[in-house]
Length: 209
Image (tube, rainbow, N blue to C red; front, side, top):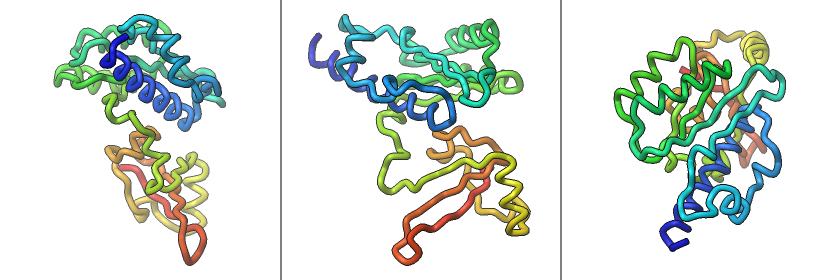
């Protein structure tokens, strides 16, 4: 394996680790061995030759508290992802009755592919991340505070406790990198915990729009 191939394997290993951490943070079941997979194990599993078959990287996870809530993660081979692979993924989701998916694309997705995803949004929830976005886990950065997504019950209890309407809460956009990491949906509330020199810990809440 030449230097360029080794670099690509190491790069994809970092992406693979981050996406497993992401789905774990969203409440899906991920084994400790997958979360802690080292580069040698990744190379032996997926890159015994110079090329990585990205189809082999595809994996399925289910929610800890709801086995019916499943999600497929896809790694397209094409550097620019068009309509054909998207329809292939949706067909697989339909066959396996899986309503959620994440696409990890190498460089770009065509406007036509994005339109197909948007058109399927009523039945299937497909997200997409460029590999470069997952080279590091942004939630582990020292400048990113702890984010905890509230359940609907916790959100209602918060509003009742402080006698607030949800529109009175500060906002976080769905396009925010941390919101995308946690898969925040419109109307969800996230609890943000920051360290404070005066009070020890400062807590705030934001409504996703």
